[in-house]
Structures are given as C-alpha cells and as structure tokens.
Length: 456
Image 1 (cartoon, rainbow, N blue to C red):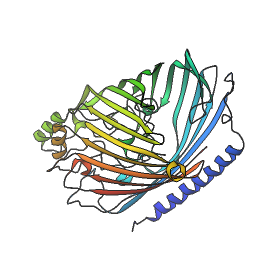
Image 2: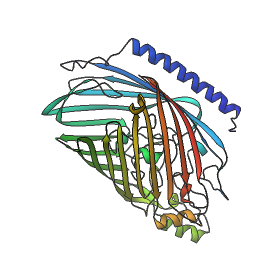
Image 3: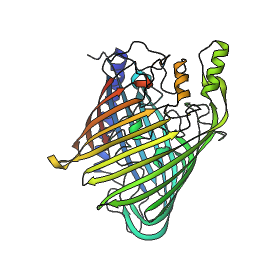
C-alpha cells in the first residue's frame, strides 16, 4: 500500500480543490463566453479567445530489485507522488493574421523521486522543480504572425493557443516570445501530449532532442515555418538556461540553441502521414565526460562535468514519423542520436534513442472518443558517458553512484484514456522501466498512474 504523508495529503486536497474550481470555471465558460467555438468568421474578424485545462496525475512505483542506489536513483520502494497543473490560454488578434497568446499556469506537486532516476522519466507532467503548495508561473507569452502565400484555403478550428479562422495551404508563420520548443518542433499527433496520451518523456519527445528550456520546459526565442505544398521548413533560435538544467534562462543569449526541421506530408494507400527530420546545435558552457573523469582521478574526487565546463558545441539529429494505418489506428516512431562526449544541457541523459508505438481510438467498441496507446522506447549513452556514470558522476536525471553492469534503458508504456464527457477524460497508465539509469543491476521498475484531465 502506498503511504501518503500528512503534508502530501494536504497538498493533494488543495490540488483536487483547485481542479474542482477549474472544472466549474470550464463549465461556466463552455456555456457562456465561447469566444471562438462557433464557426470561423468569413473574414477572420474574431479578436479574442479563451481556453483552459487542468490535469491531476497520481503516479507510483511498485517495489523493484535494487542492490544499491545513489544520489540520482529512482527510489526502489513502493512510493507515490502527485502533480497538478491548471493553465489559462488567453488570446488576442491585434491585426489580421496575428495572434498574441498568454498562458499563466498554476503548478503543484512532485515527480517520483523528485523527478530523478530514469532517462526516460515516467511522467511528462512532472517538472524538474517540485513544490508542495500551488504556485503561479507565466509559461508562455508569444506573438504568432501568419502570412498567406496562396494555394487552397482551409478553415482553422479553435483550439488551445489557436484561433478559429482561415489560412492558405502555402504560408509563412513566424512565432516570437516565450514558448515551448516542442510547440513547434518534433510534434507528433499520436505521442506528444502528457495530458492526453503517453507520459514517458522519451515517448512524447525524442530522447536525444536536447531542446532549449528552463526547468519547466520553456524558453525565449523565435521560429519561422514555411509551408509549401506537402513540405514545411522550420528554423528557430532559443535561449539556453544560464547553467545546464537550470530554473533561470541566460537573459543575454550568451548561450543559445539553433534548430532546423524539414517535414514531408504524404499519403500511403490513402492514409495520411508525415516524416520530419530535426537537427539542433547547442552553444553553451558544457563539460566533457573524459575531462571530468580525468580531473576526478587526479583530485581523488567524484567526477563532475560542472568542474570542467567551457564554451563548446553539442548537436544532434532525429527522425519523427506519424502514419495512419487505418481510420482510428495510427503508428508513430522516433529515432535520434546526439553528441555523446559532452553533457546533455537541458532535457535528459540520452545519446541515442529509438521509440515506436500505436494509438487506437475506441470506435471499434462504441467509444470513439476513448484512446488506447502502446509504446516502447530504448535509450542509450556513449561509452565515455557510461564511464562517467560508472565513476560516480551524475547527469540531469540519472546517476546511481556506480555502474558495474551498464545496459540500455528500456521502457514499455500502455494507457487507456476514457472520455467521461466531451471535456473530461480519465486515464489509466502503466509502464515498466528496465535498467533505469542504464543500470542492469536495478529494475525492472513497474510504474502505474491515474490521470484526470479537463479542458475547455
């Protein structure tokens, strides 16, 4: 049985109270101020929009084999944690083709083991910063300008951070401000939203895509997207954290990341799909594993990349596939590699990755708004990265203090999301993480979760 300390019970009560309040507001908004849920205005005259969401995740590990543990190890006991967030999406159209969005968010809770212990961490709803009491942050504030360039005109449905209206097939989209890099790059309709589909970090994003972000997953920068027929070219530049894995961005852009992506859309046997290639180059103060190991040996101390950081580059490239197999059934796959000689800067400790899975809606059993998903991922690190962990070094998320038997980290996840109403869903999620932290001596670690989500 999962023990729940009194402080956590109080925090959980507060979070559930906030969720109830948010649900009430959602119902009021749905029945009242639906600024952009009607049919798109013919001349795109709609000038404002409001949406919102709230999500509670209760997640627990079931006790698993672990002969030892270190500073960044996943707790081998039966332990439970909860996270809560509620987000308001308020938009304004200041002029034709432009949208200004602001996303204040209330967050609360902790990831398992304080969001440590597995490179493919089991909850995308868990930030690297955990707090007992709810707190408010401004996660996004950005301006998006769409410039139509011709081709077939299509209606755009109202959605989160998206106003109803029209746009042409060929267009230029420019976004500037504070945002998530994953809002634009490495997207996948079947595996990209921890509030609706998979939870594992390296299933919802490519594990090697070490995208610029603060500890909550957001950065300041700009991106341009050029849509032309079945092709899209994307490019962006973003601010890095002031030090790797930090709560604070480098406000002077002295450390930054450049990203490029090319996407191709197609049909196979009449079923839509897309394939994207994404590359990134990070320029910042990073430590090399071999230098950290050498310094640790010379000083008789545990190696630390923080002690040998200097300005250098780290890059990576990844593939991202989504493909409908038949109506209601989709396949996704991701694969990536990144430089394995220097420490990961922002996301997680992965130098190579491969993930694949299926997503099926419930129309076959009369529940068309339900979804079931099955995914698997294999993550790995370079040989020098393994040596660093074996010498006692720690990374962003992993580090058991030693690594006598290294192995790839493997995870399998299955979820079922049931639509209780058009605006509320309840999900059951199960994962098994084998060799957490690349350690063959630990695991497999079973992880279970319940997720309640509402939106308007």
